[in-house]
Length: 84
Image 1 (cartoon, rainbow, N blue to C red):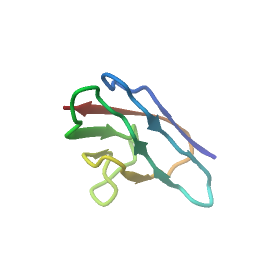
Image 2: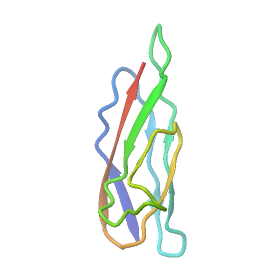
Image 3: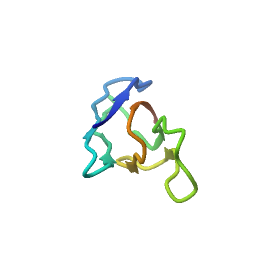
Image 4: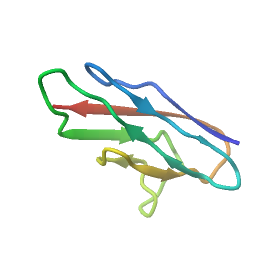
């Protein structure tokens, strides 16, 4: 089983959902439903903590709700920054 864990550095009110990934489906969907009182989040920076990432499956994303394929079994520490 793949397990992606997260140490978010999100500011304000964050709601980050991280997946549990299994060997039969290594696709990990990440979901951010964060909100900021009196503002709007306009930028995301995700790091999936995957040293086995490559150009076709990068270790980072700027999407609000990205996905990532983990190709090697192990624990991973992912992180996300949201900016307004």
